[in-house]
Image 1 (tube, rainbow, N blue to C red):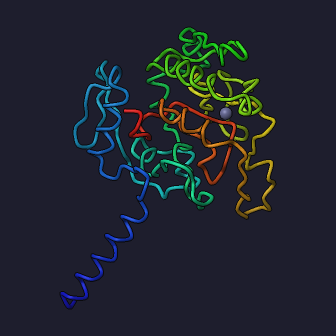
Image 2 (cartoon, helix red, strand yellow; image 1 turned 180 degrees about the horizontal axis):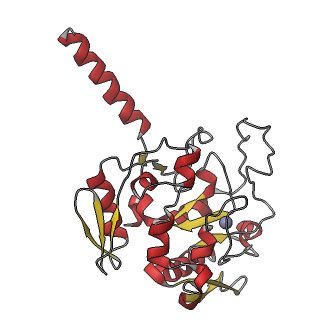
Image 3 (cartoon, protein in one colour; image 1 turned 60 degrees about the vertical axis):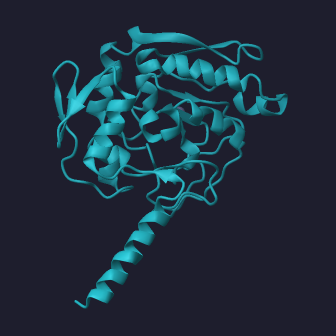
Length: 265
Ligand SMILES: [Zn+2]
């Protein structure tokens, strides 16, 4: 191939890659991926070699088996540890609805989460749950989340900051629709993020969910969101991602995933 043509092709591919990652952080190399996990789960993960994550108790876990196409059914159902970080979570307000395949954080490697937070079906998550006071001045609702990895502490910080917002935000926040719940995601055998005690649903009334949008079979759900970004920004600053940034949107849902958020580290 002519070198000029090849040079131009490389330049175009680089430009496309830069555009795709603009304002977002997706980890691509296994070294980058393990680095982020070590940084954000440092009480549990000791280190990594080129292909394996090494836990503090000596357990070794493969980082990757074979990359799965982001957004595909296999990516969602059986993501490797590395697959979880390959779809970048966009920072800041969304300029447009998330495109198909953009569900950052929606794929969870079950072995990884069980290792950090435990299996709720055996009672292991339950014994780590502590109370967070939801909006102490405005509501005082008690919510149960895990204390592992600082989740309860971070959610209390979120709650204290949300409590200072003006009263026009109250209807989106009070009452919270719940936190810990040991259940599988409907129609699957995968434990929901709520089963690890790392997720919270804010008030249901003004939220939108892709399943409620009732897309025709095979069609894309029509994106809708009514949650003000001021709320989202506070959660993100403390390590929580928002389901409103998913193509399969769930705008009441937030979960603790600091590995997807550079600003939380
Ligand atoms: Zn939820």
